[in-house]
Amino acid sequence: MQNQMNLLKDLQEIDQEISVIEATRKDYRNELAGFEADATRVQEMVDQLSDEIAMLQQSEGELQQDLLKEKDNVVRVEARLPEIQTQKEYVAVLKEIETAKKSNKDIADQVQAKNLEVTTLEADLEEKNNELAAINEKADARGAELQQLLDESEAVLLKRTKTREAVASELPITLLRKYQTLFQRRAGLALALATRGACMGCNMQLPPQQYNRLLQVAEIQTCPHCNRILFVETEV
Ligand SMILES: [Zn+2]
Image (cartoon, rainbow, N blue to C red; front, side, top):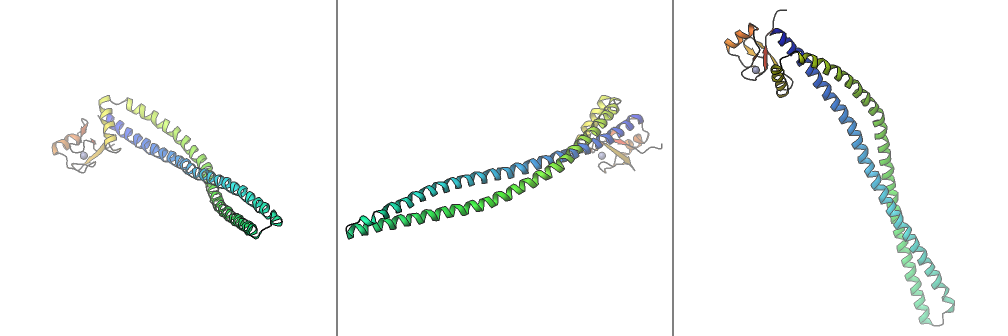
């Protein structure tokens, strides 16, 4: 019975260690995933900005074409001036030129507006590209560190798991199952010290008869309140 109790104590110690290693490994993996999520998020912004800039540049190109046409138009109409015979025709042509010039100016204004928008977006793009580069640089450096930590902890985990299996194999299967269930339900504390008539797992008083039997270290007993497997300090 004392031997089983010692095995259980060993097992709990190893299991607690395994829990810590697994939690740490989870943190490492989350940190790695965080870098990836950050990079993806900024990359999406970069792609979106690049698309917007390309679209603006295309529409700016189209406006430039329109502008050339309008300029041609002005030249073409102005060329007719020397051949004009009547005052009425003269006024009409002047009006046509004025309209064409106004249209020219409108288009030129639009081109300028597009240009300004492109400049602003290009500044945003540069900022996002720098941000992405910084994330990737950090991810590369820390990522290598994290990968090493993961590899190292995996080796330790494997060792502990082997030790655990060896210890567990020495325990009766029903006791092992009971312990395992408690370990999960009681957040890694399946065993509780009983001292001065109380369970230290839940701080509740134990029935005096049960406590007396415990002191005799004759059988495995559980706390009637928290169900943990009880042990008493014994002289070594
Ligand atoms: Zn208890």
